[in-house]
Length: 420
Image 1 (cartoon, helix red, strand yellow):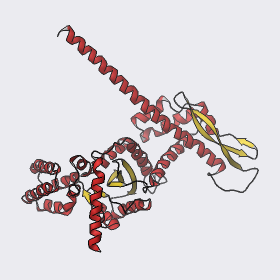
Image 2: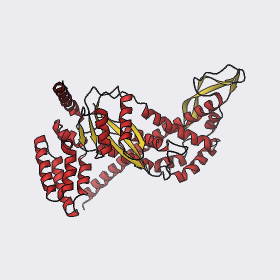
Image 3: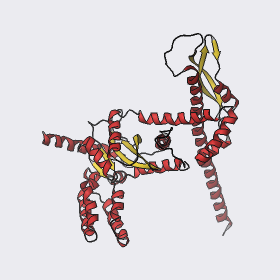
Image 4: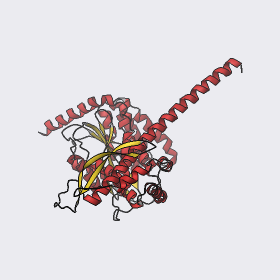
């Protein structure tokens, strides 16, 4: 190798190393910023918790008494996070004219929330077996009881759950709603993920149940309506093959909104009826269906698949017929190739679930709904879902969504005219 080539390679490698170091530094800065925000919320929860214990909830009316501790507004304060002072609002408490100090604020002033130990646990994920150990370290460093810090963690996650359940859905136009289930131990969470008119993914709501029963799904859909989901505007559903979920959509909305059945789920279901030697051919035919651009071509491919399945398994044909035209809904409304890739499967919500599983993978002991902590699964899921949502990208091909929604609206008007 000549000297000139070697020097060029060396220079290029130095550039790559420099770029890699810059990216690593950027990631570290982003992570530390997110960690500071989370720990600041923890500090605020601790202060509010002590204020509630001493003076009662905010805005609570009580009889005037010189011996009663009451709230007296708030003052600016600061806590140390990562060797920096961060501004925070702290409640003022009084008993008569005497100022009552907040012990938690004094403790927070003495310690540093962002320790190397806390950072390490946040990076690797927190397992339940190490949870008590971490609480003891944080509590010991701040001069607080372990139970106080634990209650603050619970309060912060409960706040995320409340945020999710109280979202106003009337302020946005929704183009598609993906619904699927994620499982924790023997419990199921039915989650609705909305795609708005700008192609942005947002978690709309969730319901916990033992299975994907129709009633749980109905309760979820009804909660979306109660929080302002516009049923006078066009949108469509993207569902897996669950019968309970499909029945729930039909019971709540009738046939007003089209449904796209997930092509991946249906392909997996069909393979259950086929011998292994036929799996590769089934996947090849299914991939060809997904690549179709026009509805007419997709119908021909689906008819060929049905004919081929008929030579192998009548049960597979029955499974295919059960889904019917709902396998081609997105094709019927003229979505282009990019948009179809986003909407003919439940991959969008599955990718969100993969992040939830990663964040909750170290939790080994989920409490039963009848136990004291009835909302543990929902609290953890809410934190993980909102975290995944904050990192979500716009769906591919979202620029064509208005055109697709316009065609759905026109079909709805035609159906109404025919019924009248």
